[in-house]
Length: 262
Image 1 (cartoon, rainbow, N blue to C red):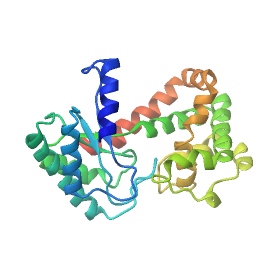
Image 2 (image 1 turned 90 degrees about the vertical axis):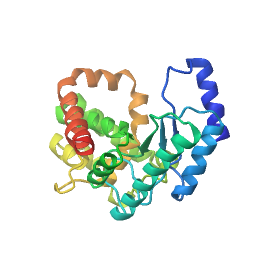
Image 3 (image 1 turned 90 degrees about the horizontal axis):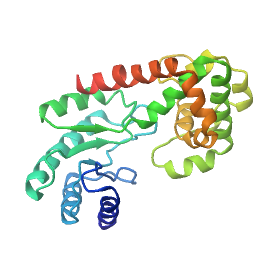
């Protein structure tokens, strides 16, 4: 937390104190924090003078990138409710911002948890932050693959290069990915896939034949490949903007915002 304070003060000096939202993330650890530990972490954040807006603890179970939650739903509900109560108490006890919210990482695509989250944030009248950047990136690839032509070629190339660099890409994310290399399709086979085959393997529809959670997790952490493509990738997004926009919008609104908050 001292390091978090140092980073916050450095950022505030450069950007101005009121020009950014501060989150403290402690989710990529080996074990979840219990309520007492979260309380002590919030005490240390207050002592450092960090105006924290969101706090992202680790919960029991697996929050792997881009796929559904794997774990005990009842245990998650218990921990989530306890954390909401700890935050509410700590806000008063330590004069933390009254807008402090619980944050769920990696929160996207955790469809089995959304009914629990919806019920509890309403019960405790609590705010919530759900981290969803990765699911949007995957919808961009889905849109490119569906568009065919150069978009599909880019999607296939991103997978092939991600497959080649599997060890490098997974190294920073070992706590939040479970990829069985033996269940990944051979890139040479993927070269021959149609748009439909690629989309079916990647899109998060667990009951659909062809869906591959290992393929999806690898592409989730393969954003670095797209970044290295530079304008070739961003130009493809612009060229296929209507398809990409439809996928991104439907995924965020219909599959995330409505189940969580409606």
